Amino acid sequence: MNNGPEFDNEIEIDLKDLFMEILAFWKLIFLALLLGAGIAYAVSEFLMVPQYESTAQLYVLSKSTSITSLADVQTGTSLTNDYMVVVEGRPVLEQVIENLGLEDDYESLKKKVSLNNPANSRILEITVRDASPEMAKQIADDIAKVGAAFIAEKMDQDPPSTIQWGYSDGKPVSPSTVKNTVIGAVLGAFFATMIVVVSYLFNDTITNAEDVERKLGLNVLGTLPLEESEYDGDSKKSRKAKKSGKKKKV
Image (cartoon, rainbow, N blue to C red; front, side, top):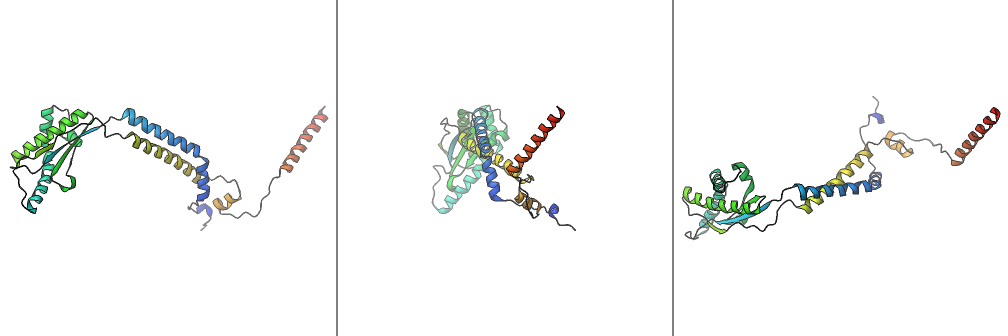
């Protein structure tokens, strides 16, 4: 069986040559970087809808609850985890939709709501994200009200106290134009570099003796350089022959 170079599926990569190839196309890569950054900036500024957040906070233990032992503290922490499930449940969110006349259904509103229990405390944070800062605040406040009332009625517990109503500072939390622009620039440069690398790997053009040894696996026994003087001499002879031929015809 012939195991010659034509059956060799391995590709040798000269890292120095590859680096020089990439360096030779630095203008193309830089242009792709600028193009990617420009596209990402334009999409972030003009196509993506800004999103705003508002956060309300509930305190799980009410005034009537006294902490007398570690067991009470652990009970309060466990209740916080239970309340997180209840607050984003269907009964609470559907009541909020009805109260505010929202066009969202349960699933779409649930995607806007995120709950957090910071550092395993007895504080429950209700964060709502919406395209309108005022609407985000209204939804967060109403979820806190409805959730507290539902807990008191259905779970036979004292309602959690609201320690912070939703707020709106008017600053969007997304999209991040700077972050998206940087990502776009990196992706543009990356794809341009990949095109150069792939082109280099699949380029089987032989231009010198080193290419013969590297790509064909053959040893070069010798070379016949074409000197410039020889080339000029052949050109002069051909020109003389043409002139002499013309004279004969005359």
